[in-house]
Length: 285
Image (tube, rainbow, N blue to C red):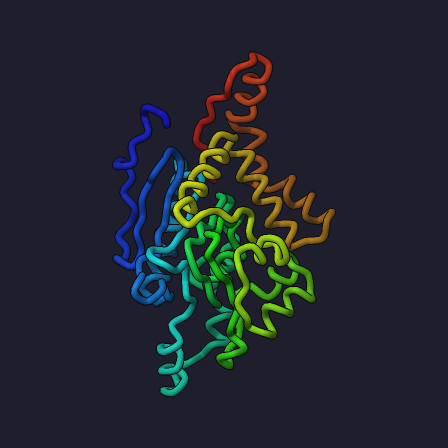
């Protein structure tokens, strides 16, 4: 850790106690969903806090990677179904409009595509419904060996509508995605890694966050301009056909920042001089 790294120098905006925010190592922010008695089920307050913090994180040049995890024995149990029932019963539910107008999706994560900074899911326990939707939009997923995953919406008469259907179809393939979506059954972390292919690593429960921090450390050893441009390229590949994705990426502001920034010269000079590069914070776009 750099001698000038000071986590106390960060002043994130005000947010609910349902979300804990910390800066455990250089260039890394850790968000912890903090409703353990409710298995970290999502609330409007928690969603708003996540949105506020992630928007701030995106604008903070010295923060390069974010990790999201859950407090207690669950990662996230998804939506609050009792509140959903109340809205349905009272006639105040407007699901179609809510999904269509939601910029960043469930928990302000499941459809977030405006950030080029890597997001790591440290899945400490069970993830259901919207919790899985969040995970599928993270760039890397570290799961506890006792973590379980399910999309049980069909068992409750609702729909997994916040981005997981196309993402899971792309990652797992149509037939395996159908297995999760149409049966609504629970799968293990090993199955999520080996069959459905949306988990990178399965580790002991006590090692979930430390492993995510180590992955974040390895990412932060690389040029932040290169990392963020690489992620942008992956995101664009989900939106466009091959050649259009390549052309759009090559002409983007993120690519321009890379090619005209200090880090490209530093990386090439460090290679030529046989030394470790000294990366600087990316310029604001």
